[in-house]
Image (cartoon, rainbow, N blue to C red; front, side, top):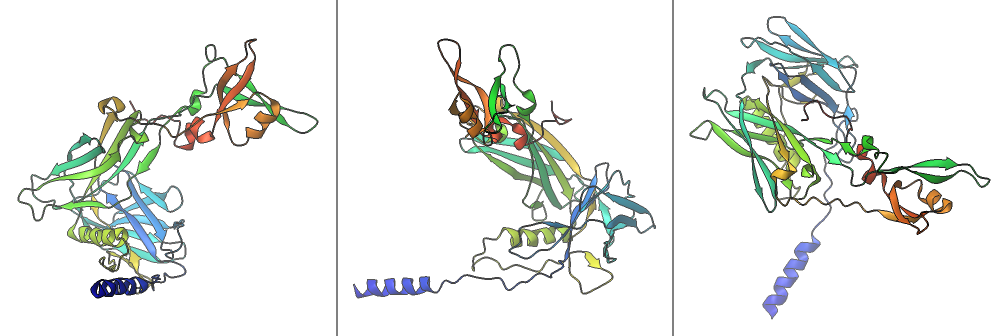
Length: 386
């Protein structure tokens, strides 16, 4: 008994030692420059994103607009990138010479200059397959590749998901204002679903989502220069496969330096924050501020031709996927006051009940995001969609 009491005392004492941890790291008030992206030596668009570091308690992303960004060759060639949206800089068909080295040059609007080291143009092998495995938990997608030349040892992947989304409810009605002595009220104008179609412009949309985790791999310790890795997992019943789904995967050939940089970044950003986790390590990239050598810069630039592969998956390919929308509809009496009351918060859908004499007794309503698909994505069909 005394032994049990002693153990309980020790456990209580350990628990009482827990204190909130406040990070001693304080970011600069102006923020350090963050450079994201890969220079594409192929015929795919090069995108470089410039940001600024923020304090740990600030969730807002601060982009760096108004910079002059270009790719400079050791042969004095210049390839300017154009800004398209705040902090995003693009170049198309840079046609870089694979026998030359290049660097990224940045001049921010405050006059500071940043440059990467000169790096070689790397060749990226093609993606072999994007395969899938389906079980009662969901769908796992895998990427596989190999390099017969043995030159590529380090890889990175990212992807963009697009899926077809149908609003849970079709809209056959719209509101019409009705002026009255007590102010504007609303009544419903009913479209006969047999004679007049629903509002198709808000029924079918295509949401898009980019990958947000660092996915990289190496064949250095493998006998064969082949890689087969899980790319992403989609939980069973997800809306992404409610109709049709597509994933466009991009593959990059990395230098050893860029690979090690990404491994450190992954460890720093995906750690759980426990005292038993690996502590954050300093990120040392290959980009430097030439106007102030002591100023840290976050980023690592590589150059390669980016390989892409897109696949489509239909809901019919996955038996018992069982996507169920969380949306519900509400029945509202057919009178001016009731309809005016729900006007600001609900969209009309269809007739709920009819009287024996042919009049409408009530209507169905639902929240805007359950009726209008543009809350989730664009209603403009993507050019690659079948």
